[in-house]
Image (cartoon, rainbow, N blue to C red):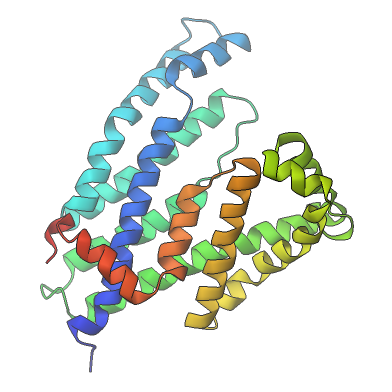
Length: 283
């Protein structure tokens, strides 16, 4: 027998907050990307003609992406039904296309937003499947879909950290494990006053190893259960806060996704979702 609507509410509440976080992040990704004029100037600097069709098309597309992202996100977050879900997928497509245009126009520009697009896509696809499924929103199929979407999003976010830990082991063993020189040098060159203090006292080397260990354990711990998820959420949100204070590096959307998906208890999620109950006509 399926769970009652009240028993399933924590999943719905957590998905709502995840959707709102993704929507805000998608808008910021597009609007914080290099503006069309800057991209055009870079293209000219590398020898492309001012009147080049490719250059003009890229600029036009970037303007179009900026105009489209907010309406798509607002309809996805505040609307209901299959077309709201389609609007969510369009929001992901707009953001991904913006990143592709920037990467193609600015040599060496990397995208660090793949995880955002993946989590947003999972939420939007689940919205679509529920909208075209049985008419009862609390049906067993709808609840299974929501549960799988939430589990998938949690695993994706945890995998981001584990992948980061593996990359440190693979490409920076001496810098992160044996000597701890990578964080120490970064703090010395680009750190805030607090970050430079950590560098001078060589505390960064002592911090580096636990950070890598926590990152590596993120995905396995999420599979353990609620306690594991809370540990992963608390440790990685703490790392984000420390990075922000030490180097002004703010992956705010990833920190918020981690908080919503892994850290916050159901009671707090319920209160936050209740305060936003007007979104999508929820009651």
